Image 1: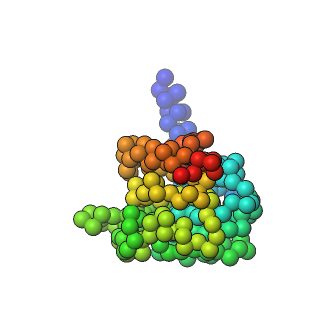
Image 2: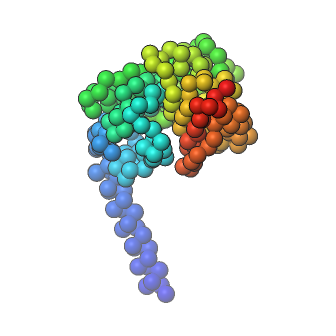
Image 3: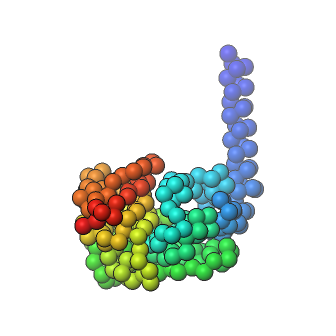
Length: 252
């Protein structure tokens, strides 16, 4: 019994050593990763995020739903572009031409634009945040590129905060140079500030990642309910990411 325990412990320690060595000497030095034909700058990412990309786990839900339901004729407003992967995936793999990205985090913008250049595409990116009303909003920036959220004026945070120009969903749709029919939204909880009761009639498709861990289950059900009232139906759910579709005849 003692020998079995010793062998088990040695095996565990050896496995842990190999994993640590792999992350330190293979994953950590990586500067560039290609996923689904999209090449990304990963030099500023943590080893864990790099590993997620290498194993194909990054933005997998949005990727699946985009490939299943979007087509080259769609006109997309992406709110929360991060490092640009979903935008590049939609344009390179699906062939979408009319695509504009909104990204609030100033630390992410440079990487997003550089990734477009890496992939031979021009980026249309707005440095703005979706908000409940137009005007400056405070953004809490975390250590990872995806760790950012809008703050209430009364909330304190140990992380860096920056001021970003806020726009309502309707204003962002109206500012596009084309008629937007598709929304892709991943804003780390800021979906709670979007008035989905006023979603423009031109919108037929929505891919949205919801964050009940940040905003609570009640608010998630509330925003989905608002979209159902507007004629949308949830056609598919991948983990916390939903695809909603509205038939043209149902638009109010």
